[in-house]
Structures are given as structure tokens and as C-alpha cells.
Length: 99
Image (tube, rainbow, N blue to C red; front, top):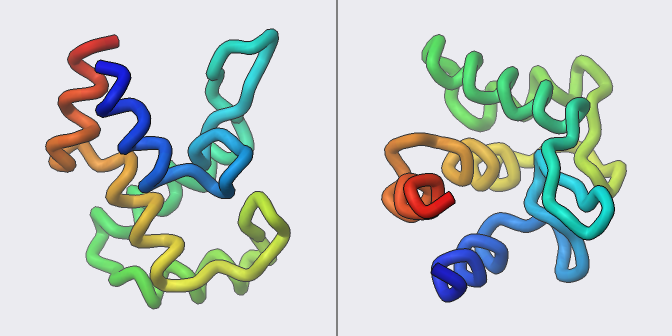
């Protein structure tokens, strides 16, 4: 299990020292970040409604939403977050089944 968690963190965390987007540390434990989870749900919803990652990044930027680091959204960043939370991602399914 630890190996999969490390791979997940390397692929999907926001930066080298941080938690994956959508999460934060609370008392040393990983917890959901409500503001970031709202953005994740928005990304998932827009993608489910047929928008591609470029269209989603444009919408997020038009709404003046920023990444954790305060940057504008890029197509690759939106894709990375969508794949990290998507139930069809085999690694995500594996990690969720272990928790």
C-alpha cells in the first residue's frame, strides 16, 4: 500500500512539499480541503458535461479561480486533477480500496 501512496503523491500532489490538490494536513493527518474539493467537483462536473480540459481551464480562469499556488489554470493542470480524482483511474481505485 505504501508504494501506491508514494506513486499517487508523486503524480498528483500540488508541489513537492504539499498534499495532493483537494487535501490538506490537519493535525498531521490528510483531510479534505473544502475550497479545493469544490473546484475538483466543478472540474468533474464540467468534464462530465462534455467540456474538454482546455474549455474547463478557460472557465476556471474566467471565474477568477486560481490553483493552490495562485496561478492561472492550464489544460495540463486540469487534466492532472481530473485524472487524480476520476474513479476510472486504476491507481485511484486501488488506493481507495485500501483505505
